[in-house]
Image (tube, rainbow, N blue to C red):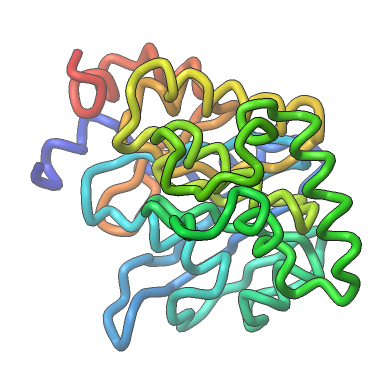
Length: 262
């Protein structure tokens, strides 16, 4: 798609307009972010604001910079300028492990990242690899088994026997062992059958509503992502070109034509 095709979305939102989409209980902020890989800049003066327990879905064409946002928050990209804060703490220059341990930022990869020959329980315990007290990892794993019967029944089985949806559940659950406050979720529906997509979004919804997790989500299935999220950001060429409540974007004619097949 060309830049001209995105002109129908109107004027790009200002930082103040983006802030208004978050409540007063600001949790995660990204301001003036310029980031990329090597010397290549992918994100240009990017801003994002999310309140505690809010979900934000990032949509846009391939190459728009959606995953780079998650990478930048977690520490997988080069940040040239700008700041990232969680609960007012500047985490811009912290390592991934420091971000996970100090402010609870967890990243759920889009790739199949389970260890196939390790048991389900061993995979879960890997989520707490940086905990000083390993007993805490076992305690959190038990809580997860009590919550998700799918995993409990297979706790001693190698992860390779799990279905695609169960592997996704394991990946999400493994991130929960560190009791994160922010979940960065990259393409949760990718490669899954519809029934498992429904299950994964139900789990994310439960984590947001009942455990007050802040969720930043990249989802190629824009319709599903906007149905789930409180707020949607539309990106192209490393910039936000439109933002609004998820439901509003879902029924925006221009967004429908560009991303929803409408």
